[in-house]
Each structure stands twice: as structure tokens, then as C-alpha cells.
Length: 432
Image 1 (cartoon, rainbow, N blue to C red):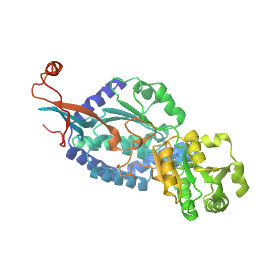
Image 2 (image 1 turned 180 degrees about the vertical axis):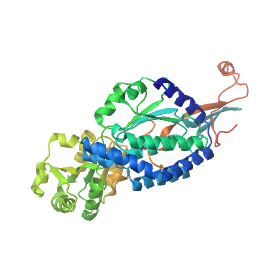
Image 3 (image 1 turned 90 degrees about the horizontal axis):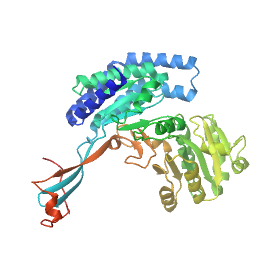
């Protein structure tokens, strides 16, 4: 099957999938979860093959960590599917209802986007999350994982697509792409594909944006910050920063830069250093940081712009909350940033002033995740200022259409002022 034929098939199926009811979609998700459980040995074996090959090819340690897909991770994605089943169907929700005139009613109703192309690297769990979120939201999907995960992705795609179609989902609703050439072709197919979501490096995302007329949603870097304010509780600050940095380093919501108010730096930084030593975290700091703790690598301008995805943390001592906000808005990626403070007013200023999709008070940056938000997983993180921002779950995978219901109404009557608009708000759901 040619790429053209494949994409046309997914497009056709997506139109049918848009009309599928909640019960059928949930039955398909249940069948997918069961099939993943039944196929654990095949999935783990395929992943072991990918890991062994990638190690021989010298894949970087953070990417190897993302690539690993063992039984525990399979259990995690199955749990995510069960959470997704419990969520309300995002399709068919009435967002607005207005009576334009007697018997002329306007409704703004959610509907699927259509066909979504998702390009992701290393993480096989992303394939499960993306495909099931697209199914629940009624979208067709084209999946392109990294070549390092090709065997795992083949098995996962086969299991998921077959299980959904066995449950009654329209055939062809999803497809796996395996070559770079397929991606190049996909980016030219704006007639059939409605949205592209790239998950990868800054350069990769920029390439996608520069080489397609299809709308792109996503994020490039995950340069996240914690700011420890002068009014922070020291024990809380250590706990939150350590979790933000080390709970899982190879992800986009891990903290890469720590900002510390100068009035608390002398007391806080030695405590943090002691806590991070057991995690083997390399510290890179500004000149003031190095005055308070020893063994710190001098930080350069480039460090403030770097997403390490590793056990490395850059630290800068700042003189005020305003300087912290300015630093984040200058060097951050608009992803996730957290303030640790006991001052509610400062927390409010931080959360209003930092221009990011996720702004936190006294909690780890690692919470910016679709599953943790209760979205049933996520298709990605958006730092764009479009219809979806932050973790993109079900609600980010629907758009809306306006549905107008009349009884022979014509514009000429209003142009001649035979009739006039009333524009009364209605408190009702759309139904025919």
C-alpha cells in the first residue's frame, strides 16, 4: 500500500470514527487493555531486542532509559487505559447555546479534529497513550516512533489496531509509519492530515514546523525551573527540588535550572547539595552559588538554555522574585515552572508572571503530566498558545463545530428588518 493510499484509508476511517458512540469506544479500549496483558511476553521480547541493538549502536543513556518497556511499564499503560475508559467522552459536548431568534438556535459542539499525525522518539509507552487517546476522542492517527523502538512499536501497533477493530472500530483508523521518507510524505499531505504533534528535540520540532503546511502542536525543549524563595520552608524546598530533578531525569518536566533567593541561599544550598550527592547529580552554578557550596562546575550562559535530560542541575542565585520571573521568561521553554514559598502573595505573582503552560506552587514540576492531571494520559505537552496548552489529553484532541437549527429562517428577513435577532443564552444541550 502506498503512503497516499494509507493516509486516504485513515482519513476515510476517521470520518466514520467521528460518529462512533462512547460505549463502543470504551469496549474497544477494554479489549486493547486485555490484549496488551495477553501479549506481554511478545512486547517484552521485542523491547529487549530494541534495547540490545540500541546499546550496540551507542544510544545515549537517557534515551535507553526512555526506550525500556518492561512488564511494569506495560502495567502502567494498561492502568492508564482503564483510567481513560472512566473519563467522559469529549465528543458531543455543548460549549455554547444561543437562541438567535424564535425557533433559530445556535450550538457550539465539540467534535474530533480528524486525522492526527504524531511523531515521537524512544518511548514505546507514548504509542499506547497516543493511540488510545485518539480512539477515545474519535480521531484517526498516524504513528511514527523512533527507529530505536521499531520492534516494540510494531508489536504494540499490531496489538492495539487489531484489538480495536475486533471490537468494532472502523478498519484503518490507525497506522504505523516506519521510515523517515514516510514522515516527509506525511508532512505534505495537508489535504488529509489535520494536525501534527511532534515529540522530540528543539531542532526536530523546528524542522517539522518549517516543512509542513499542516498545523503543528507541541513543544521543543523542556527547560523547567524551580525557584526557592526567601520565605520557603527549607525541608519542603529540598524535598520538592530533589523530586523535580531526580524522580525521573529523562523527561521534559524534570527541572533543569534551580533559582534560589540570595537571602536563603547560604542556608539552603548546602542542604540541597547533601541531598543530591546520593543521587550523583552534577551541579553547575553561578559565581554566587559557588561561594556557598564547593565542588560546583561554573555555569555558562549555555547552561541556562540547556535541557540536560540527565543527572545535571544548573543553579543561579537571584536577588528577587522579579529577577527569577525574568530569568524563567528569558531562558525557559514555557513548559513547567514551580515556586517554593510560604508567601501566598509571592506565589500569586509568580503564577501570574511566569509565561508557561504549567505554573506550580510548593510542588514538583514532575506533576505536569496528563495522567497525573486526570486526563487519562497525554498525547504530548503543548507550549503553544492555541486551543490546547500544557499536557494535551482528551480535551486537547477535540475541536468544535457550530450547529444551527432553524425552521425555514432566511437572512433576507433580517436584512429587510422583517425580523430581528434576540441572541438569548440557552441553558440546554444540543440534541435533535
